[in-house]
Length: 407
Image 1: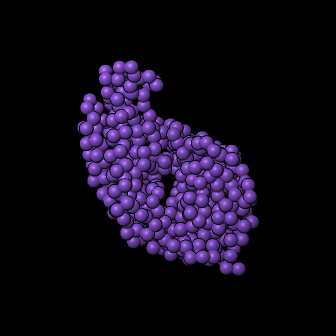
Image 2: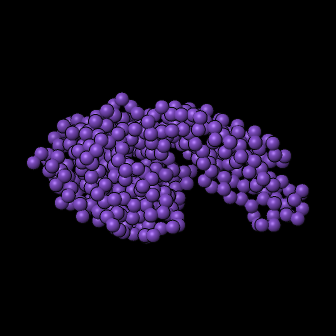
Image 3: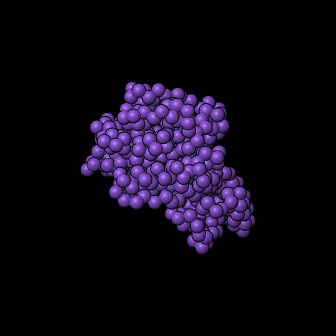
């Protein structure tokens, strides 16, 4: 048997154990917000150490979490040094958006139905805690490398931009890999992704009795006017095209809106949050200036209205670095064999933590367990799920690729 066949056989023999590990991870909620995720880190560390993978725990001080709107975070790091050579880091995040309504299965049950595992983060990205841990175990069990180092990094704030996870660890010089792979969500090897700017806009008017509307200033009517200006801008984005395969054009979404005090009261305050996805070619500073100008200009057309704009998040686009070629080559080579089809390398409209590594000059790509497309996973929707065969195959691809990278 070749080394690749031996790795595949080990993963097949231990796959039931791998699935049980993922079920345990799904069963500990990590809704963010509120981001009280230290309990999940504790449970994950217990499970990893029971498998013979010692874990370094790095709790983030509460004083640094509070400004980010998070409650508790402990980052986990597994270091396996085999000898001199490069360090390859694999990073997956455990935080998730709340499950919402419409589930046919328990979002925290990890139930298996027709060969698919259901649950929040089953596909994005607690699955890759499992993918990466068992790929490393296979590598060590079959024929441990003689050079290099593998690091598994499990973090808990990707939904909030990664500042308390990868950025915190990089800034504190706790990690400095040569290459990195971030959690995946499709068959493709992702080499670029969109950026994201999120703003909170508060529209101030003057509350009044609904029977005497002229005594107040309606913040909701002004908000509608501002939103119309923003949606008109969103329509224009379709004319702006990215040169990166897999990425189309910028777009804007308003995901939260709230305000008012009662049905019979003129609303004196309305707040909404917008999400602006930026293609790699865009300058985030210019995007933010433009949005603020559109909001201010629309508000100025509404008498008695003032507006506050606060930046919630700025995640820059992932720009591919030339040094990522060994990663792309290895992953494409083995994914082609394991999946039985060519696997492209392209961009995605999502954003992830991997950009933080690329900004630090560390070449990285996105690859892990996922369905053919992210849409099929139901990520951030009801009934998120992952085909267990996709989990098995991605684990084999990662194990095979690590073997090549550490030669």
